[in-house]
Image 1 (tube, helix red, strand yellow):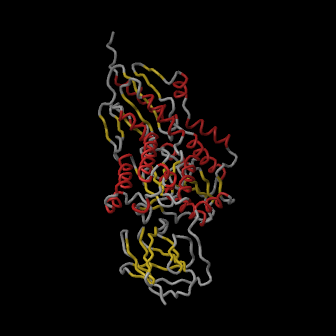
Image 2: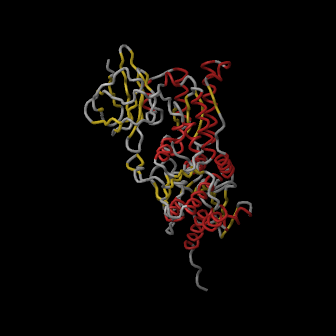
Image 3: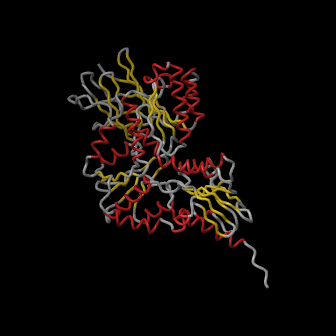
Length: 513
């Protein structure tokens, strides 16, 4: 008997494997497939039974591995037997060379990371250069002006400008730790080739400084990272918001030294979705599907659905209670769900997790929403069988949002929110000001404040910058100031100095005596 099947493409291009046959006497067959698409559905037909699964392709070299035994289909795992894919037809046969191979279980992310952390090539504690690095960071990133403002009850007046600074702002512990570890890594490996899989944090000043220190950023081709330039023995830093488990596995397989600066709060979220997976709950992740942290979190989850806001959460809750148009659901979340997601099957048991930088209040509301939904659907006595929740809201994010909520209660004329434009936590600080209808400007660096009186900024939810010709009115003015968790104090100082400089230049010259 021969095993054969069909390949139904669900991505951008078609592909088939070179045809050959698989005897059913082969106990277990592993196939490694290299192809140009990013995801496809494998359908295995045997006699009267059909099994299928969606197979995701590793972004490294469009490489994936799937395995099956008889008519059982497993998730992608590692393998040695290669089969090349080609374009055009849509049918395939596969051949394997593993008659004596024992069945392999689904890839265990928890076991992999546990083994990785025990490796001599893995480090997440630094290299013993903390004092020296602390002095470097003190000289580069701290601010005497910001310290003065803090000591003056977070208020500072110069001329007719009063600054009111949020009482919690800027660098959080996890960000400071990540940057310090990156500095330590360069100190400890002065000649080795250093890489980082993403920006260490979302701040242009810090990332440019690391580039100047010889840290290479993994290049991105289109939507995919290109790891081909990384070799055995290279040192690779994982940023504060982590890296996907697939990237970790790839780097480990390459023989790289891995320096893991992932924030412990992010790791806490990963542990939560691992618990969801072990108990067969779907992880509903409050986050942005393309954000590096959420991509990493999803890689540790089993079945998952990523929801951006309460509107999307309410849509999902309504589907759970009342059903709906399945095709519409799948289209709405096509970029934000696990492969093969079925809302009729996969929303029976749900667990809540979040991107750590999202709005705290919104994450809490989502948790309450899904708790109420499952209680209505299945009854209070069955709630624990259908709903799971852990507190994964980051303390630093919560403190900065609470401080911003307090700040906007004061009277002020305008708000400056300082931080990287791709910083999620900074965007949410901006959102708080906008909701209070305070004129607010999100800038990433001092140079956005122009000496002609204009300001270049990114409006809330926009993807491009705008220039507002006149943002600072003449006469006495109160400016609220806060900054995201990736913004060092020195950037706040330089922004305020630009504001004061403009004000001085814009004042009319005194009349001659």
